Image 1: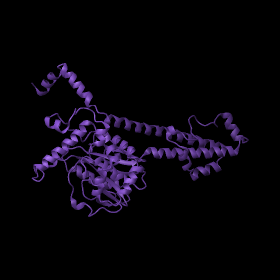
Image 2: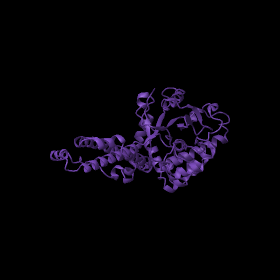
Image 3: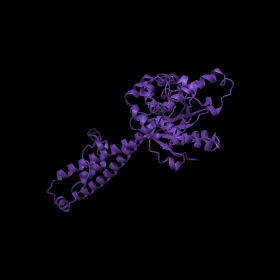
Image 4: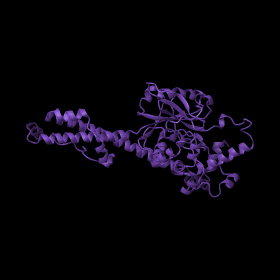
Amino acid sequence: MTEWNKRRRLNGEAGVSSSPALSKLFPGDPSAPATEDDKKNWNGFCEIESEPAFFNVMLKNFGVKGVKVQEVVSLDEELLAYVPRPVFGLIFLFKWREDDPDKQEPSCPEGVWFANQTVDNACASVALLNIVNNIPSADLGEHLQQFKEFTRTFTPALRGDAIGNFDFVKQIHNSFARKMDLLNGDLQLKNDASARKNHKVAKGEVDDSDAGYHFIAFVPIDGKVWKLDGLERQPQNLGPLGNDDWLNQAKPVIEARMADYEEGQIEFAVLALAKDPLFTLVASLADNVMCLRALSARLGDIGSDSKDLQATLEQGTHSLADGTLLGPDLSYDLSEEAINQASVPLAAEQKCRDLTVVDLLAYRQELESEQANLRRSIKEEQESVRSDEARAASRRHDYGPMVQAWVRMLARKQALKPLIDETTGK
């Protein structure tokens, strides 16, 4: 089992050079950054790399909460165990090749939300929607929840058309588009139209080398594991869920597809959509605060007349540790509402009721230490979110004009010719 280079760009690497044909297709300065109106009015979808940060920012912009995308660096069992659980779905990126159509269901089952990809380069958004729309009780946000309800009775093809016409999704997807991405997309459409006009596809002159990289999804739904490939007409049932981790059922299918290609000929990537650790950590922090409140209330009921309590006061061990929270703190995403929704475990209630004052204070120190670890972990996850946003902002920035300015400056200083001669061996 091989590992994949982390965060490597697997699609969208082709460039567009200047030519009279392009000048007719794209009037104006093709190196100028794409404006928001350009992206909004563009009818296509841009290619997106297999970068977890980009998918996380897209989910956040969609309004989806409680889900985080993480790269799976290997399908080896030991490394797969580090992926947070539960895992809601996998996204697999590979150079697309059609699977056996006989493996597909005759029609899409009622409990499976599956959309075809009917628009070029929309596979990233289609794969995301094919997963999050199948997560039970997922917080999809207002727009996606309405879209899911609206398309509930649609066929997969109609759902795909609905995604292509859903401006909310398209604008978030294309927020990553740079001017060259728009030009590449339009050029690809032109080339596809020319190929059809010349009957290349009909004559079989277009082979697998013309295929692009493609995202598909693997999802557990209603006791079964499903392969959801937007370029296939119907979903594929991989079998019922056993007592084992469902990832072990998707793993052989992914590895079999990898084996279809010569080693080193192609790159793959696997991303996991799992429960966002930040939500779990904040919920645990809220439970911790509730336990500390209950314990403080118990100590208050005992009162300062207790000899044991007086002794601990004299030793200076009664005060809370610095930074310990007993209330909301938005810097940790902890609200009063979250605290009120938390509960004190029965074991903690029993301790508060039965322990001596000395043992209660020792228990409180345990809770303070636990909270310190929780707060530290929350800060690390928040930093991860900020890192994702910074990475996405860098991807969205168009460096084309800056590069062109540098090239023009080098040309004016006559520094390009020696470089070109050295490269071409002249």
